[in-house]
Image (cartoon, rainbow, N blue to C red):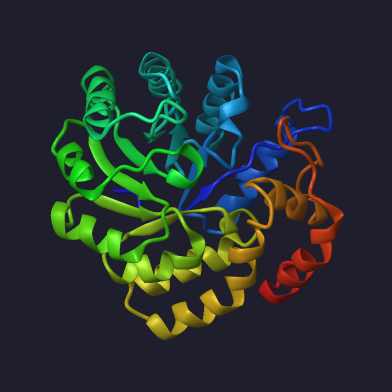
Length: 291
């Protein structure tokens, strides 16, 4: 299983929205040097919803080739269409990804039975490890723990990114599915608490800007060194919170640009960070030691 700090990597872009391949290459090398435990490409933070299919395939292929097995590469392949999700997941397998992260279908608002049928269709037709992704704050679709339990029995489904921030729910899923089913926090602010009740890591936004500290936080938590984990988490808490002052990845991209790691581009309908939030984010960066 993949575990630890798995960064939900941004997709660097120029101000006209074109992908900056050079910056992407440099970001990947930086994360490997900073001990990030895995890369999640073209997910929510990677603006996967506005990438074309060709762009997504090209990015995943390039990162897989660059990483060359040094750390896992997980591809975001979810959409609100089962047919399209199946197509994107096949592309991820072809590109060499180690797993697919598949978000619940957004906008359509499927039933719990519809969710089971959706994931079953993909799991039966692509031989690739699948991580479920539940983030109802963005999708208007909540995958309940009893549904996760049903899905955990299906072929290829190995875990879930649970992004409700509800630690009790994480504990419930762990109780239902056991250690053989991987749970990843999708909420940095509650990730430490989630690891205390059974999660084996976090698919992290904060890791974009503080990769080594997120790695150290996860390692401490998983090794039972709660005092160290709490210390690091306290330093990172302002980032955990302020990186969501506007819709992700707007603040994250702004911080990375301030750090000189990527250009300022972001793809519409997302737009640049409102200047009224600049000071708050700069303070959070200083507290975390990344300014």
